[in-house]
Length: 294
Length: 193
Image 1 (cartoon, rainbow over the protein chains, first blue to last red):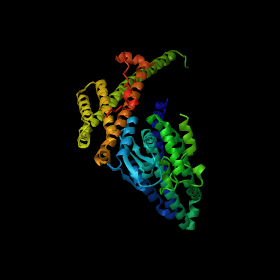
Image 2 (cartoon, rainbow over the protein chains, first blue to last red):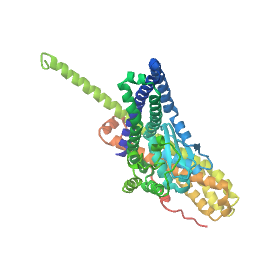
Image 3 (tube, rainbow over the protein chains, first blue to last red):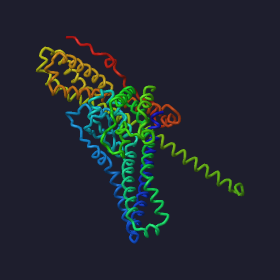
Image 4 (cartoon, rainbow over the protein chains, first blue to last red):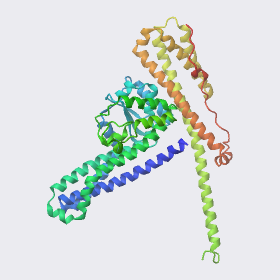
């Protein structure tokens, strides 16, 4: 039954979030240590201490303020109670259907039809919808889209996915720094560090690719579940199906957002050429088909 | 070693202790589950109640806005005012829900009549009120859905084994009633001019 899978998903997401934080912690601390070793081998231990402190702060900030970072990165503005009364009412209605407190509502000024959710869980969440979605979708379509985001919030996908966003961003920055420090390090430092450096170098090249792949795999599976849960909330799968159809026909896939957060959206904000492997979302045709068979 | 002198009794004792502990754990988890599900129904009802109250609060505003335009529709206006008063007077959930439905259909006829008054329809205040009342209408529908879902979970819990066994001991064997969807909401309201 759908209810059971909701609760399974919640505990799984909480557990995964915890392990992800631990994993990031270890990984980033290790990376920083290698960077330190390359640049100042004498002070490597201080680098390690600094790394642990810095990563702790980073993990805390991303857990506590990850949603703010994402909202800022997408230039989301709080919805106006008068102008966007329709959207606010829709979000509040679906939060009642899901049995969770109403999330904060934001609007992103963009002609593309899209939406995303972020936050730590049902008690601290935000939903953002583009102006394109408000202009192009009718009530039942908008309800379908908001229902999709609402289920990401209800089953703690948002917590895990916001952490993944920070993780992907962090890895990208660190591998860049690692490669730069490798290039600028002195030769004798390099030979002293030996195997560690080789591993670090390979890591710096592979990490961003692997983290993007992980992001894509993690995200794709969740989308079907969120689609199904949306249909459970609105009792009307066709609403979301027809919204996805409009997205398929009208969106150009050129939203100005970082790839690190693309898995938070209801449909890929950017359509890349490497679509099938790195796509954070299953093909729209497939999602529409699944919804119409419900 | 295992079956050597007296050892076997130690094992049996251990198994009994584990069984008793497991039994206690199951007992508590089902007890808590039934209580939690029952609380969820109460919470679901209060959600409906909040929305009904909000709607009743918006009605005087709407009537104030509408009055100036609809001078000859006193009957429809009186109907709404009366329905509102009845709803505020109701206390039992079923009664309240019923009065709420009467108010909903009275409001629907006001909005249907408003179609004939372009000036009213164009008024910003009226548009906002209409959106708020539409929103409340769908929130009531969603909270009713959540209520009925909660009732379903509760009823399943107290009628299936081993919840049933627990429910008997808690004196909670009675299934909770669902909220019926009124016929009026399935039909388009009839309006006489």
